[in-house]
Image (cartoon, rainbow, N blue to C red; front, side, top):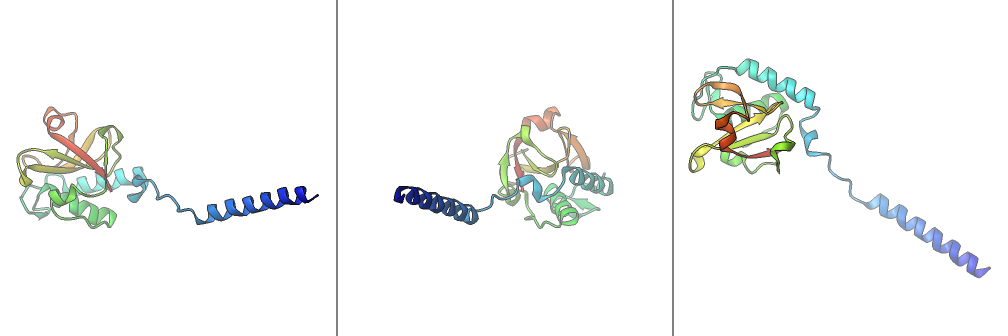
Length: 162
């Protein structure tokens, strides 16, 4: 009989221990993609932003529709569309979030390019859908471009998810 009670106590103690361990475990953070929300909503916000800014001329250091640079456009898009405050420069933006493979890109991921040398040789845009991204181009102003374009494919560097 004491053996039966001993097994019973052992089972109760193990059950309580498992229950307490489950209660005290840390919750996993939500997937990184959830920071911006539903991808369909993100794409709609990016399309609205592009529609409002399309053709705005490139101006180094600019933050307005009369002239904006690539990191300024990213900064304004995240501030205005997603209420997220990002650093102002491309160099600072390269350290945000986590790195993601090009094959795993989701709408809203930042895409970075090495277009030259040094700190001013970087370019940033925002991944949209279907291998496209929106950005402030030095030659076309704010536009949508394809990651499969020969130029962008050759200078692609990395992507980061907030």
